[in-house]
Length: 339
Ligand code: SF4
Image (cartoon, rainbow, N blue to C red; front, side):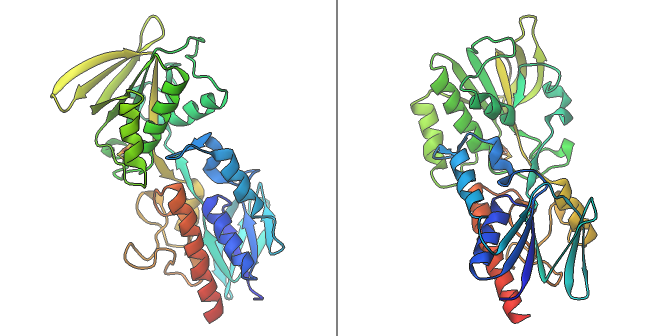
């Protein structure tokens, strides 16, 4: 097929779509703003729910780019995307131009900036960290407090930046409940004689094998789940974190002091998603891109030849993102054949 597709974003959705299209003989130009492909997988050590090595998955994805029909451009952030003369035209900050018959936005997500929840103390107290910081520390093989102590207790707080009217994100990020379960198990495996607590509004175990892992975390690892939201976190004189919460099952306020508080930060739209969607009038809710809706074809936009894949549309798990990339490739291929 003598047609060219521009894919913006070399995360899981973009790579998967590129690979399927390239195998069909379509020429693919794949751009990535970072120096490496793989998107947010780089932030993880092990994936949920099966503790698969994230580095391996990333390597397998990256290997798919080694294809004669794929031209991969790293460190290339697309700042402008428009349709003219039956072609999609993209420009990066150094005015390099890419032209193609169809374009796919696979611009992914960013994690919520926990500093926006000032009352939780992130950026103020050393031992308040995010789930992304937890992964970075876990990569070193140790979880320690900032002053080098082995923590005896840890609390995970779900829904930071999601399901929160104050920050304007009413939606659920879908992945942070199971990630809290995974990280609590990892913590208990590293430090078995410690205590791990998880504060939640509801535990949303919607994926395959999530419920089983949730159960295992309680039965095998003794993780304690407390239904309630932390209203405030403050540092103590001995560098621990005091948290104030309400146990919403007993309707009683409670205070607890832990060595580390982990904020389970949710998914937000990336700046590229919001900017490129705005330029092309496909901006949906919360800065995500808008396809044809949940019951229509979600990979298709109302702009001719412009497609969507992955978390630029809404929060998705990694398997869902990969499947969505393949689905987008199918739609693009159909479009190119018909067009
Ligand atoms: S997945 Fe869980 S922690 Fe994340 S936003 Fe939804 S309910 Fe909250």
